[in-house]
Image 1 (spheres, helix red, strand yellow):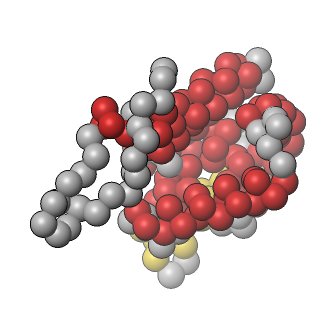
Image 2 (cartoon, rainbow, N blue to C red):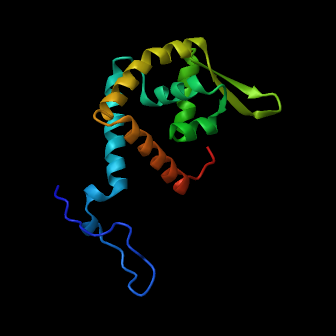
Image 3 (cartoon, one colour):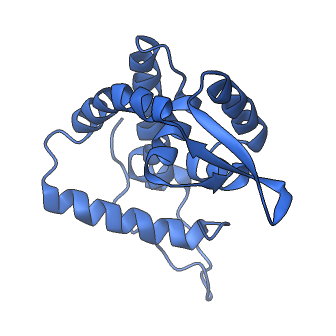
Length: 168
């Protein structure tokens, strides 16, 4: 795809001109949401393929990854962290609990809320998954310097603050 946009992406949208560049003027290769979507779709597809060999789904991997570094979370919090619908997360947790990888317990002060924790079996399962995740991560960032990566992460955090709906 040829880059045809030579103007500013962040043009003024207020004032007498009230002119926004068109999508055609910007082009897909200069439109960050499009590029982010392509990157994440490819990451998810590659990782899902690699996880098949380990007999684990992406949703289970996300839950175990989060629980491996978080002592206890609610299903709602886990859904936000994993960027997964709560209904999908509930089904995922049922399966992980059947496998003995997680434990769900009601909170003593509020029996309606369930805390989710990882078991030793769950930690062992995640330890088997982690090398695959990390190798895919390294492939994605091949040729990117450490400082560039840190800058990229900083920009992503600022973007997330601009658009997030949860304080998590």
